[in-house]
Image 1 (tube, one colour):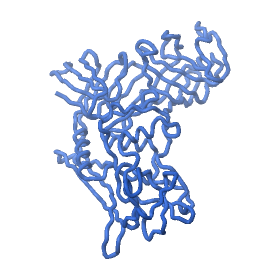
Image 2: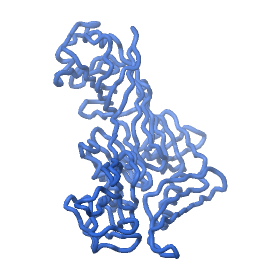
Image 3: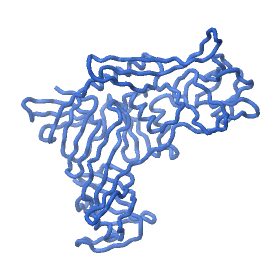
Image 4: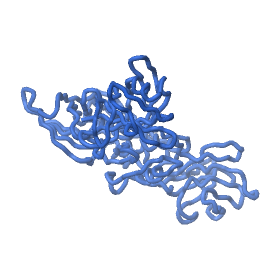
Length: 454
């Protein structure tokens, strides 16, 4: 079993004999003006010789912000390197930054699991070691387009996701004196698939759909607030991930949704405030009891009621176990807004309607949890709150086991038979979070969600 590290060091080729190991062209390969070095925590001959230069890793962790779903991502901490590695390759002092990839394998590099791809930033070094903090990919793409509005300010343009009523249309600079508005990515044709309103009164006949597909103009100046109702071109969780991934100007990763729910959960919301795309994906996936994770350059989406493979363990295959039950959730609450046209003594207008829902548990004690919702009808929201409630009250087993031929991916279901105590325990664990002690070949899986104990 070995940890493998590809280290891309910038600089000219320089080879020397160090501790009896000859550093020659087998130790590095051209990558433009850079060199790619093959390093391990122990001297490892796998396809090529991986030089022993890793002294230690801080424990790597993979977890989600919310226990009921979302982005399951790595936090790798730091790697400590032998300083002689840099000196032997004419890299002294050690470089400030390097691009690296970290793999784990029990056999060949072809069967290796990639654990990390990102940047190593030098934190400190001395005559005994060089410590690098590790930073993974940073997805900085912002979800909303920013355009110039009617006041000549550059501001986020709203986006309609799924079916929505009376989203406020953002006013843009006039076109040929005609009042012009942002279309919010609503799909179809005005009067057929979407509709336009002036203070809640239908004005489809007043709409001119512009050729850019993003805006519309009005033949006459409106008297009040202009709103639109329809369905956005992103209407499901799968639509969101397809739109976001495999786009260099969005998220430069591929997408695999084969383990997502079918049909994909619907979304209904009107996004008006700027948010990072990855954060919106995180929140909407969690709301719909999905998780996603990176595997190399692929983002995998997983319905958390499904399994991403399965395996069995007995007490001879793991080192320790515990069976935790968190403080119960007394109630899950949600607040959201919709909009509707109305008429009263003040006239006709579109008003905000506040909604609130609370789903109690069987516990009279515990915490209250408030969640963000991405649907608009109460029946759907109540049903999803109950699904989250049920998941959060499952057992959460934890086991420590030696790293074997591979690391279980998020969502894999493990069936554990534990006869190490005074009585037998059988547990099922769907991997949600884990920590890897890279220095001891030890893998600890911390499960959040659908665990059972009997």
